[in-house]
Image 1: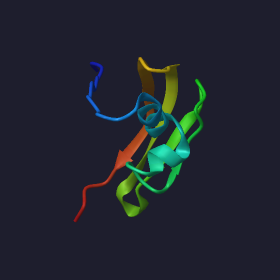
Image 2: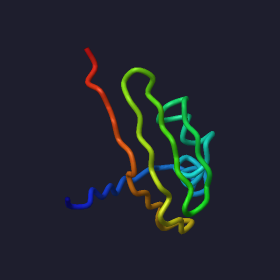
Image 3: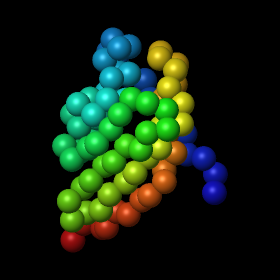
Image 4: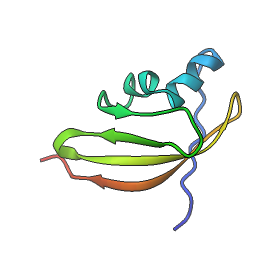
Length: 81
């Protein structure tokens, strides 16, 4: 399967964007409130969408100001009725 790469321009201070992609509080502010995350390479970020499913992402690379790379390790999203 080919990689899915997202390059998104965000007009905000770099440290705020980085925290929004790496720490639990930042991720739960824009993705899902039910998030468990650690800003550590090798950590598994857990995103839970109640009855709609879940997604677990492994932190593969963290380079402040340059790259945040995750790998999907578990994915189950159910279609909304």
